Image 1 (tube, rainbow, N blue to C red):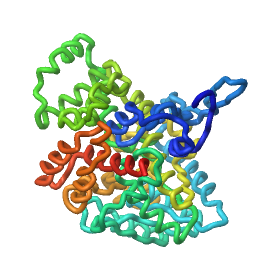
Image 2: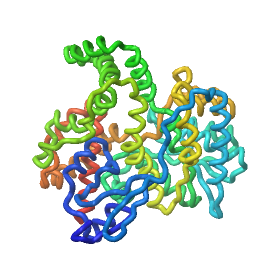
Image 3: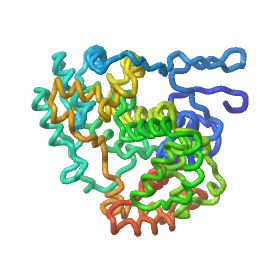
Image 4: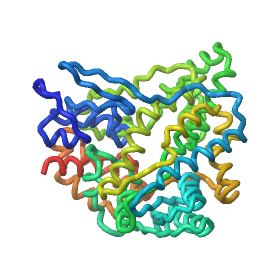
Length: 462
């Protein structure tokens, strides 16, 4: 809204270029520094609001109303057995993949070597789809999954190509800045952008494995929060109160620190989780914040401490509004659309989410296994070895590269920094932080956030 006018656009950048909105938002920058992205509750410019997911916004007679047309249910059916969950998930998944194979243009698929993308390629092969699978390779790096992906592709009989990223070339952030309307520091987006450029040479549609971790519970914290909730449920309130009062006296060092953090989850719930995150406090501790951010506060860090009895449920709701819609979905959408590539994600099918959300946590985390339902399908349809593999994720080691191959680019940008001039970041302290990190060959991710924000700011000021 601007001077009585109402304007809509698909991105914040489009509105800004059309002279809507205001200055760069202090709250927006603070949230970006907290997460490395912005949620739908914030925009990087003042006076711009985002329409919430699954929401219809209506403007009529000068008034705005909103209506939510889909919402994930929270009822979990205790009668569903693990075997029933596996069979129904497989049926729904094959149905979802089949829908997304409908196209009159060539189709490609992402294959990272993990559970979700391997299941996508298995379903494609089973359904007879003529698709080439693509993998990002990081030669010689511990994060590289290209050999596992190649083995899976061969086993499934699906065509496969590996796109290598070495980090040897000078850091080019132009594509990252162009693809995302707001500052966006998801490192794996670099890999997605490169692979999207390659896939576009061969296909117009790209099928991905996004969404499986989020609804079938595939992240390590899902196990931690489930266990924390169980402990909270079995801890007498009197003991919980005593532990809460004495917790501050427990030293935060090494394994004791980790145990203390875990205890805080049981005693403090979601509030403890958000307060323990390494976001803005890292900037504050290292004196990186400029004058504009000195008194900034975030609602994410003001969630009250409560019992962690329902921690996993609370976290899933919170995660859906932050990381899922703020990082995961925009990463794929922005990275592929830059190259006019249409991404389709079977695991985001609403029927799958509606069903999976009814599964008890004990089914989704059976025998303390992350996304046990999907792993069981992999065990039966692909291989036990892949089903038992440890989750790695789709990563690009920017924190390692920024201390070596990309260090000079960081130093050059900090020398004449807009972040410094505009009062957002003390770049001299950022450079000192990078120099301290060189010995470990690993920089805090906050330095990567700064690099991306500086590059975005320069792009916006051209």
